[in-house]
Every structure is written in structure tokens, then in C-alpha cells.
Image (cartoon, rainbow over all chains, first blue to last red; front, top):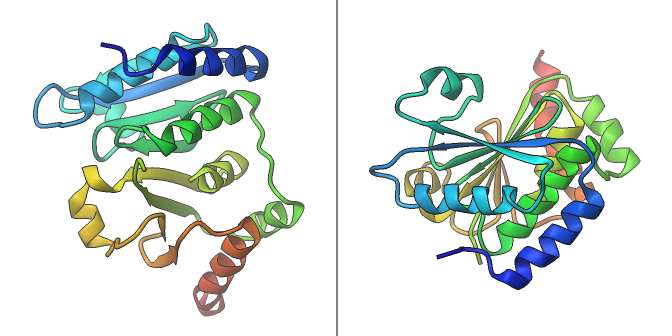
Length: 142
Length: 71
């Protein structure tokens, strides 16, 4: 049974057609056992990717594909890395459903465009911070 | 969540994880997550709630100040 409803698929498909510029890879880390939302997350990734020929999916087994786990710095599952011309460090841990689904779609489009809308002051402040920053944003689907 | 991911796309120094709180209860305990969104930066800086871009950057810069002055 599909996770996305037909009307939502049409909306996202249209936006992808109009706004995706460069190719995007959705790299999904999963495993069959002891992961409550892994199967749904993989299905969601594949349903989203099917809405544009600019999106490709790679699926790796968290327990087996250790090189890829290390390459993408993934430490828990389900995980999705949104990769464009490079790895920008954009990750989703857990299924991006509900409110987070729209964030997921917008992030894919930003990565595809290779640019984001930020205030000039934000860009300036960010450029002035010398140390690496790791954001973990805790969210819920509702 | 969008803002943190935008910052990651903008800067090579930033990486940003969206973490589904219900699926990772051990992390909600570790980081004392009682409401969402809760932003944890470099394990030590905590910012509550959905806040505007300018506020986030102000709070971030303020939180980073002591570390910068020590170095």
C-alpha cells in the first residue's frame, strides 16, 4: 500500500518538475530487523524518488555496508542523506512524515538548486564562525 | 528544521540532522528533549522552539562567545 496519496504525489511531482535543477541522490540506510520505521522510510524514499527522474536512490544495509556507514557518518537508522553535487551534511534520522515531509521535499529542492535563501546577516555571521557546527534538531511528525 | 539544513547547505562547516524524537527515545533522554523542536548544537548548546533566523544566529553567536574568547 502506498504511503503517499495520489493528490500529494501530483503536487510534489509538479514542484519537482518546476524546481529541481541538478540531480539529487537519496542515500538510505536501513536494516530488516530491529528497526521499527526502516521499511516505511525506505518505501517513502522510493515513492518520492519515483516522482522525478532527477532523483536517484541508493539503499545500504546499516549492519553490513560499513564503508558507506562511515563515509556518510551515519550512526543510527533509519537514515536518509540528501546528496547533491557534494555531501552538504543534510540528514534525516527517522521517517520524515507529517510536517517533516514538506521539509524533506523542500530540502531536496534546495540541494538540487545548490543554493538556499538566507538573510545576508546570517551568511555573514556563519562565515565568521570558525569551528565546525553539528546541529541536531529534534522533531515529531505532528 | 529547514533552517538548520539551509545552514548546512550554505556552509561547509555545518552539518544538520533532523532527529525524529519518538523513534530515538534514548536521545531525547540524553539531550533532555521535553518539547520540539529542540536544537542541540555541538552537544552543548541547546535552543528551544521554532525561532526566527535572526534569533537563532544571535543565540548561536552568544553561546559560542566564551569558547572563542578562551582560544
